[in-house]
Amino acid sequence: MNQHSQNYSMAQIQHLLANDPQTQDFFERKTVSTYEEFVRVLHKDILRAITDVQHDRHLFQDASFGEDAISTVIIKCLKFMNYDAEHDTQHGGHCDILVKHQALGFEWIGEAKLWKGQAYVKGGLEQLLTRYATGTTGESAGGLLVYVKQENALEKLITWHTELSSHNSTHSIEDLPERPRKLYFDSVQLAQASGLDYDMRTFFVALNHATSIEPEYEHDGTIVSA
Image (cartoon, rainbow, N blue to C red; front, side, top):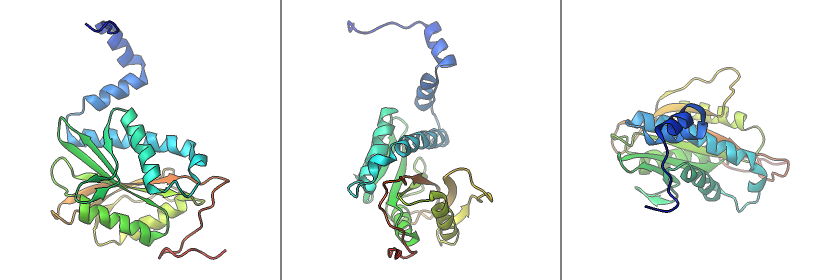
């Protein structure tokens, strides 16, 4: 037996499960049995990773922190939470974020874009739906992550929600309240390869800081003149 191993009593384990949030979260991740549970828990943990990134947003203002670098930080957060998460993996192309449940064969794919106007984000959406997503059993959900270094991420989210509502891949989309209090929403898209529904969550990540230098962009990606 490993000299550093320790036997834990059932009473100790039950105490942690009843009182320790980290233990509760760990067991929730490790005991999912359906794809729906896997996606629900993963979405909750992605929001935790996004919160951590937003708290350190002053570190991401340099131009060297683009989509890949920020996605890598989110992936490291997910790995710390015991996820099998990868960046730039070959999966019908080089997807930004791939999260797998090896034992059950589940997959979730995320495509990430800096906010550079609606047309640029639409390019990421179409990459996800025409290259990576299948919509088949065990891999019928994914996400679009939009990193916003400019002011007012909510304004950008509302603008994108309007754009996505009229996109030809959109089957249904969550209505936004008059005054949204969160930076994400759900929609059902068409996975081009299969023609099946693809459940997508769009996350906007608020990275603006007093030191931000990222310009504003028009719909087509041209820089707004000062």
